[in-house]
Figure 1 (tube, rainbow, N blue to C red):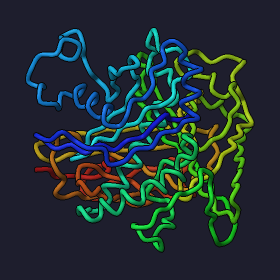
Figure 2: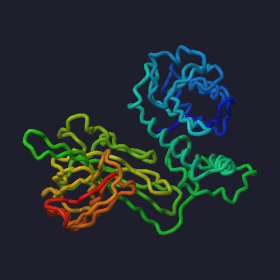
Figure 3: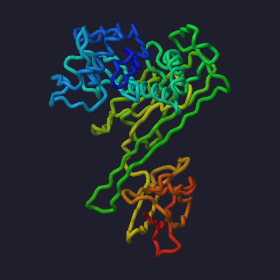
Figure 4: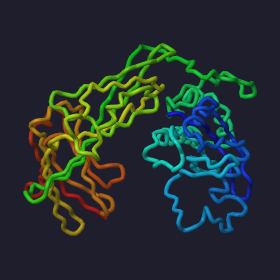
Length: 416
């Protein structure tokens, strides 16, 4: 989904602020007129937009005075989405994210009337605009940037935004991963990049796809309490192709007994998608009309690894069955863990690990353990144990014992 404009505003307390970066898309603006009709409001000049936004955020000199529309009790601001009063009417939805001395601003396209105001959750371009702003913020604030570094990045940003968001449509929100072809061009020279993708990658042509699934499960092992579980996954992709028009299609096929994917959220680089794929939602009860694939994602790939799509799945049984028991004596905790792969699930894992968190216990100072398979590790923050289980052994049932304590004990941990 396209955006109508991007801005980076500089503001420090006691100053009037300035516009550091500005990019507008006339073709998207023309589309906004057609979609918004009578509720359409044109984008004012940059200086007027700056004043209206600072007034909305309460950063102007009159911020100490009570402003009815902004400060009344009936208005509760819970997001970074704002509405600006401009000469042409109300400009909405303005995404404004303050970060340090800068305010990152984006105006996404809304393909419907703005009166009455539609729910944010129904506007697809909101999430893409947030992702684009986050990518720009990450690029500007990478490492410990000095004023000289930031000025240099601002000079590169115009060219990089042209690549990441050609003609207003985000195709790559990871600005930091874009190759910088301006290194050989002096920042004093005027350079205008074309509005289409111009660079190509070198090396062996290949496409890498990685699927990661996570399971959240609560199992009671009691007849009165029903077990609950959630499965959600991410499809990551990286393409290295020696061509300018990198039109790629990745297809996903479900296994014979696989459950349909639900709540699919795609990367902005996806150019089109079958609408029936997006109908199935975990909020509504699934039925026989659920989309069963194949799932095809045509896209223009970014330059680095990116998340092609996210999804959930309503599997009929928990993929992994588990038993967990913990006893506590003073600062000592004893744990027993038992895991087993469900008989209907195939062993197609690259790896499997069980994470055992300890909330409100402080840091683990010492732990003793003996794993029947795999190995046990302490996390960096020293507040959870990670059981790294070997792939070839996940289809069997296994225990972890403590050689210094009565069975069945996983480990003995000591906290602050």
